[in-house]
Picture 1 (cartoon, helix red, strand yellow):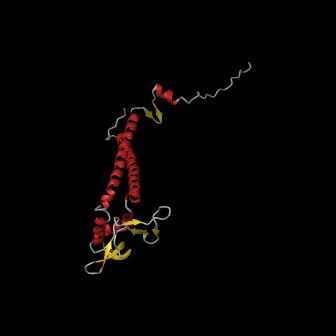
Picture 2 (tube, rainbow, N blue to C red):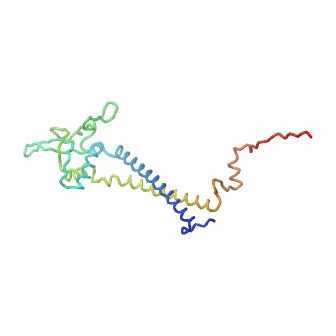
Picture 3 (spheres, rainbow, N blue to C red):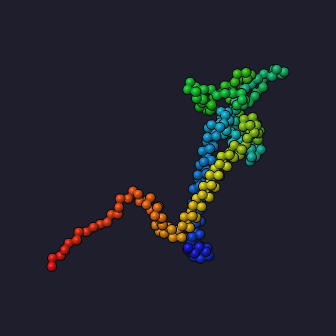
Amino acid sequence: MAHTNVLTEEGMTRLRNFQRRTAGYVAAWLMCGALVSLALCWLQIRYGLQPLQRTYLKQYVRGSLRASVTQRSQSTYILLVRTVTNPTTKKETLVRVTDAEVEPVLDTRGKIVRDPQLGLMFTLKPGIPYKYFYWQVGRARDAEMYPWMRVNIYQGTGLFGMCAPMLIIGGMVFFSGLMATIIRDRRANQRYEQGRAIRGTRQLSPQDYEREQEAATGLGIVVYERRERAA
């Protein structure tokens, strides 16, 4: 078996080669893990969220990020609201609706109707009182809107909580794939050092050789005609 002491020149060369291969493995599996996480996030947004949750998602992400930086930031919010008359004061009160109070408008093919500017179109469920029902556009403090959306729209789930399962699965793909690749690399390198794989050749057992040569019909050998010279 070849000498593998890292203090020798040969050992240092093999170590550098292994580090280069490992860096390539890390980059490849990191990309695979990221793609898996992104694909799962897309599936969660497309099929796991309710219609109003999908509509508010961009505003929720923006409000969360800006509220974490400063408490004074303000953003423009487009919210679905309804007005009701207060029986005591007889004044109209503005109420922000949730997914439990609305349902999307469907076309003749059963698909959700979209507004070019506001996104999905909704209608109030039967029995929900209202005087007016519309989209409200206005500015509000992110530090106030983010907690409201988190509690009333996303059932207390923050951005990290929404992404955590996808990130965990992507991380599992990354680490498991990386470990499996490194183990296979080490085994292949050990076979190389033992002389079982030298410069592209392989040491095969008779059974393996017969199995790989099943399709072979023979060896091609160039034959030249022998001519006798006249004396």
